[in-house]
Length: 363
Ligand code: IPM
Ligand code: MN
Image (cartoon, rainbow, N blue to C red):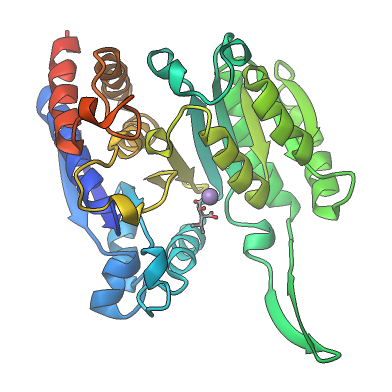
């Protein structure tokens, strides 16, 4: 198969983990007779240097023409936030590209690998039944995209952020989450704050309505504060979670603590036409940049999600995921996972071993 991939590496560790990720994709292309054409484009601070904006039309055009978008990360160091290059960089880049392609359905898988279970911050007995869930986060609505205002009242500054959802937005993500649950354990937990918020009452109504189309899926509702608690005391209870934009942002970071490192967390975002953007859940990690220690797994696992979900290359995606587990199984880890720095391998060394494992696992 021939596929065009928009490669938007961005800032910080983005370019270095992307470079390693492309080695993995080339290995797949060679071994499965595919052809991947990479169209590189700038985003974030990297784009600002060339275009004086964070998400230029040139980048959107390259993404538009591609079969899928492979994204790195954006944003700059804390001590440089005063520079124009970094001001509002994440919002200008990510929120613009999400809105432009209407990437409403964001999927964040959370898994505690048995090979890495010792890295989970919870007591062993809390994860004995395994942790393997998908968080479906609505990505183009809610408080992120309502009116943001600052004003003055009685000589005091005040601010407001508007949270809006319409039925269609809830319906779209609910269907996707139910369909995913059907392919898994048939359990869907919808998370809201229906005891307080009007948007959450609407959310619950629509999710209940959509449930009629999926009689085999057991639907539960959970309030977001309780969900945060449950993710810590009993994460095994969750199969698929579906929630609105900001709740999903917060809960997915909370859940990302379970596997032991943000460097393991991939994500995928889709629009109604199934255009997909695939990116690590973590940020640009400026403090790790250039040190050759960044964990490339989040980027590589995002590419695996791209192969499976955008290109229907199931064997190829399975191979990457199995090889990553096999690499961990051999005790090969980057510094964020290794028990001491002396045992850690560099970003590129990890991928050297990973490519070997891929070869070993190829029938
Ligand atoms: C994420 C990030 C973004 C978000 C930020 C960088 C705008 O935290 O993808 O989770 O809040 O959506
Ligand atoms: Mn986030």
